Length: 185
Image (tube, rainbow, N blue to C red; front, side, top):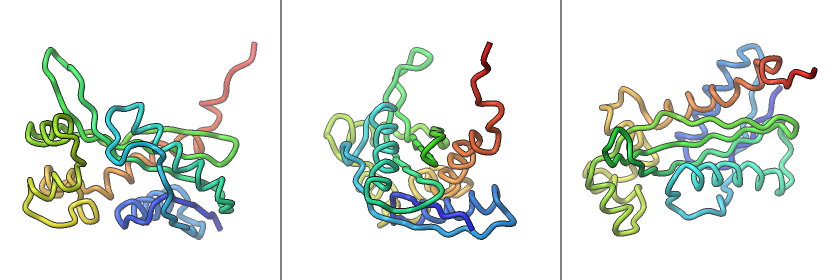
């Protein structure tokens, strides 16, 4: 059995962990421990650095809590404002940090450009994406269901699937360890 601790109780994140690990280890029973854990960053991370720091902190805080697991995962959703191709672009991003205590890995789930309304409300007015998404889509609990990415893609890619893909990418360091080892000489 493989035990995976995830620093979240949100169903899309927990389900993403279950599905990703079942794909990676199809012959092994997977036990998932989900725990609400602080990210120690702003409730609405802004930028890749802060979003990544939040994912890292979540995983490390699981370890500090004394939870025993084979893998510790921190998943953090954030927003990223950047100038790309000569235009200001505003993205929803997700950082996934995984560690087993010896190997640390980081990946990012799909990034999707957000509407101008979201940029104004989040960056200019200091709001969080969750309530802004509820307003944009006239729907409650967007975060706990298909997510903003699901709403924007007409559910072609849901929040769970975006995080699942990020987990599969973060786990590449574990199932391709030889490629990530430093060569000596």
